[in-house]
Amino acid sequence: MLKLLLIYLSQAQWARNMVQRWGFARRTAARFVAGESLDEAVEVVHTLHQKGICTTLDHLGENVTTKENARLAADEIIHIIHRLSDDGVCSGISIKLSQIGLVLDPGLCEENLLRVMEEARQKKIYIRIDMEDSGLTQMTLDLFKKVRDGGFSDNVGIVIQASLYRSEGDVKDLLKEDSKIRLCKGAYKEPSNIAYPRKKDVDGNFDRITKLMLDRSMEIGSRISADGGVPPLAAVATHDPQRVDFAREYAEEIGLEKTGLEFQMLYGIREELQASLNKEGYSVRVYVPYGTEWYPYFVRRLAERPANLWFFLSNLVRR
Ligand code: FDA
Image (cartoon, rainbow, N blue to C red; front, side):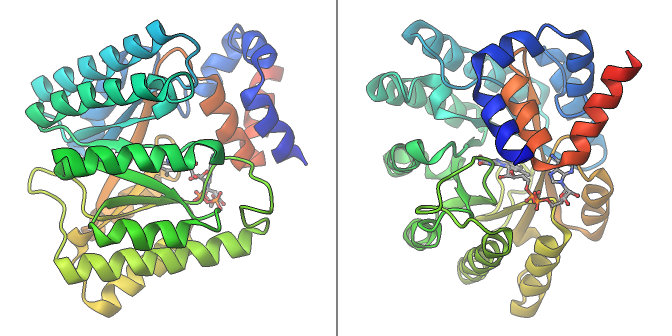
């Protein structure tokens, strides 16, 4: 019930207008968001890099409402590409297609995405297309496949959500072309006719899909690139120790090298698990969000774990 309320609040404009003005909310969000500027985010990228951890940067923002803002969002992504390339750090970029116009005008979104991909290819920066709510799943997959097949397969990947019934089929289809996949549980509230309502079924599907990805990784000998910039085919994005153990044990069972599997986690969450996997020799990539539009991202993190809400409320009491 609380989770549903928070997911609703993450999308409510009135709540965003109110909460973004609160200084203590911004300070609490700083646990999950690397800062409001690119400079602050790059500082975090450098710190993680020094620990041997790669990153993927996310300039926060979704569902832009004007074509001009969609173009500006693509311009900003291109700016990040240049900054990462100049700095020479091991970081890619995660983007949401609704940020560059998918809901507004799919044609404009495609144009923006191609602009981003051209630049990313030139500068050798890897782009991961995040997955949003189920209303955008098919359009996101279609556009991903278009760029993948349009000459960008080396530096683009997609995200799949284990919560959706369709995902196992989507993964089988994506693996036919050896698409790089980040598997996550899914952060959006979806109806039971399209998504598993019970956590244990989402977890079961997560493990099934992990197996499919690891088997294919093994067959084609997929590995992270030498400089760490391009992840292997299989990226397991979770903080759930049981899902991590399953992936690790299955990879060992089939003889997949550690460089053939990447674990991905969010900035500020389960840092001790990130460090121990990194120490064991796995590639670990941290998703580093930044920007002024932190509200929906932050409230989704609260929804995932009620303890985070108490952390937020205790900051409110202490302010
Ligand atoms: P689960 O929610 O079962 O949590 C397992 C354990 O992890 C918890 O018990 C807790 O200890 C810890 N944990 C989880 N969330 C926490 C939090 N917010 N704060 C503190 N501890 C927490 N989703 C999506 O729909 N589209 C996308 O493109 C992406 N992209 C993405 C990239 C990366 C790198 C990650 C790690 C995740 C995503 N997600 C996402 C989010 C994902 O779908 C999911 O909502 C979160 O990862 C939480 O689910 P877990 O797999 O961690 O498991």
